[in-house]
Length: 467
Image (cartoon, rainbow, N blue to C red; front, side, top):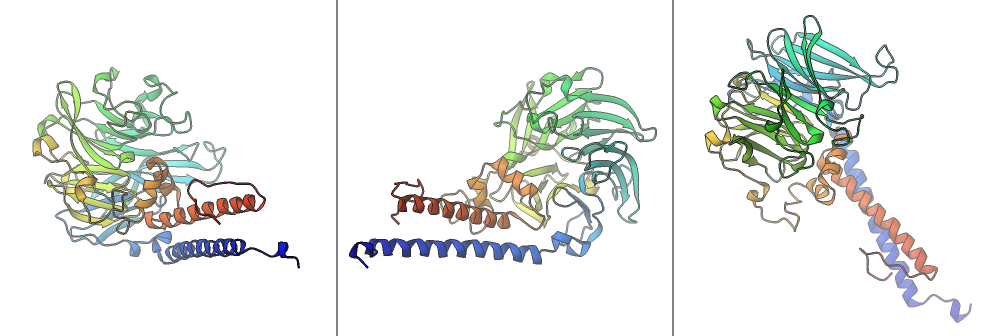
C-alpha cells in the first residue's frame, strides 16, 4: 500500500467525529420515540372513558366542560369535584349553556362526522350538526334541532344562544352565517350572511373556511336589547347585528389583521350596562391571553387582560358573579378560575377544552360585572417571573412544550397541536419537534460531508465546526 493511500490523522479524526455525532443523533431520536411510545400506551385519553376523567377541586357550584378537536366529550362536575355526567358519543362538543328554568339541564351544540353518502353528503366525510338538551341528573338527551351539512372541515356549529322558548340563534361556520330558527317548526325566521358586509378576499380561505363564525350572543337588556353579537374569527372581529338594519358598523371590535386588538378570537361575552358595561370579555386565542374591552365615548378600549406563562390558545372566558374569571385554556389542557388579583384559585385538567360553564351563575358572563366596575388589574406572562428562563421568556423545565412554541409561529404551533393525536400534549409535541430538528440537522450534515469529501466547500450556518 502506498503512503499516499494511507488515511491521514485528520481524516481519522474526521471520521470519528462524524460517527460520534451520528451516535448522538440516533440516541436523541430513539429517546424521543421512546417517550412518545410511552405516552401513547399509558395515556388513557386515547380511548377515554368516564373513569379516565380527573376529579376537580371543590367549588360552590356545578361545572360543565366541553371538549372538541382531537376528542369530543362533555363532562359535568358536582360542587365537591366528582364527575356527575360524562358523554363522548358525539365527534365534537362546543357551546354549552344552562337552561333558564333548571341549571342542571343544559343545551349544547355538537357535531358528528358522517362517513357514508346521503342526500346532503355526496362526498363523505360530512357533518351532522345538532342542538341538544341533556338533564345532567338523569342523563336524558333530547335533540332540539339538527342539520346534515355537506363537508367536514369547517362544517360545524360552534355556538347557539336561546332567544325564547321556541327560537335560537346559531353561529353557522358551514355557510358563514348567523341565523335564527324556530326549533319547533324548523323554519329559519332571520338570517345574516357575512358575505353581505365583508369581502371574501379577506379572512380565511374562501369558500373552505372563510369567516369561521364561532360565537353568537343575544343581548337581552339595555338600550341595545335585541341585537345579536357574533364573532368572525378569521376576520379578527366581533360584530353587532341589528335584526332590522343588519351590521352596526360603529360597534365592531377589531379589524382584519389588527393583532394589537385581537387575533382569531373565540367566545366573546357581552356584559350589559347594568353590570358595568357595555363590555366584552373575549379569549384572544392566537395571542394566548384573555382580555376585556369597555365601550367608552363611542369606542372600545381595552381595560383588562390576563395571561400566565402556561396559557396556550384560550377559547372561552366567563366573568363569574364573585368577580373571578373562568377560562378554558385549550392547548394548556386545563380549565382554570382566576380571582380578582389574577391568581389561579381552581384548576382541572382537560384534554382540549372548548367551553366551561359554572352552572348556577347563569349562562356565559351574564352574572358577572365588568373589569372596570370591579377594578381588575391586568396580569401578563411577564408578571409570573421565574428563576430561570434560559432566554426564552419561560422556564423550559417547567413547561417543556412551550419550547417548540418559541421556535414556531404561534398559529402554526396551535394548528399542529390541534391536529395531533389526543394523547399528544405539548410535551410530547415538543419531543416530536426535537426529533425532527435533529433529523433535519443530521441529514444536512451528511450532505455537507459528502460535498466536502467530493472536494466542494460548503458551510452550514448553524454548524461551523470542522469535520
